[in-house]
Length: 116
Image (tube, rainbow, N blue to C red):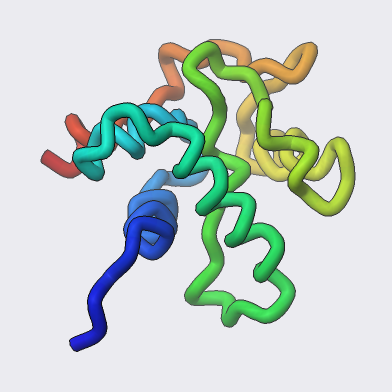
């Protein structure tokens, strides 16, 4: 069996974030045992976006559901358009104002809690 890498692990956890919920780069890093690697999580998600056109539907990584620790859409510039991340969240019923998730604490999905 091939060895998994950090990017693959990030993609796998991100695929588990339910629609209409959000998580953070730091929460994913913490869950993966790499507490100080939130930027690396961002790089992994950026790579997923860049490769999205070539991925099969079942391999889709919903990177739009990952925001910073305050609920800001800091990854939005890595999407095809400046508004694509917000549009994807809003299509799932998540309200966004001024590039920040409204009711972030209510919508926050913590993989450490949800996945054990």
